[in-house]
Image: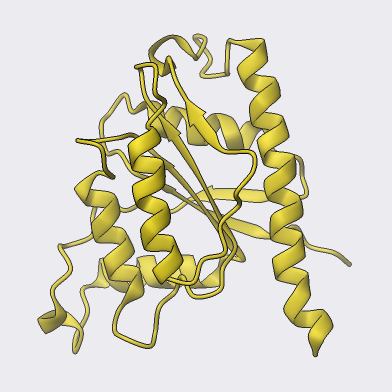
Length: 191
């Protein structure tokens, strides 16, 4: 019996009306049953401090366990000052430590950035990719996902209201699904 790969979705915004969270939720709704997308919360993570590694806070332990148990990761983020929000960088740091125990290592991933403006979070998308290279997260290269105009993207039910964007997101998810299956299956086939 085949089980759909689990994807830990990391949302880089904590704002109540977050476009990133709305987009992550919409992506989960657009995904086929071949991918199980679930949001892993990061808002309760204390700032990373190596002094706490001996007795990590419960939120760190929960977060690390949820990401570690996933087959893949999907980052959905806004752009703050041409980079990722501090809360997202903190989650990356918490998951990467203690040294040698990174929960990110080898997990296939993808990045979707968004902005109400025209650039679609281009800067945050590429800045995040720099960290993912170091963390050994094989990251989907094509199609790139910079979603602009998110302030008017969703209808009253939270669904993507723009047909061309919904079509693109389905194409993106199809490519991501193939990417995940390729990387998740590969280690088992090599054994």
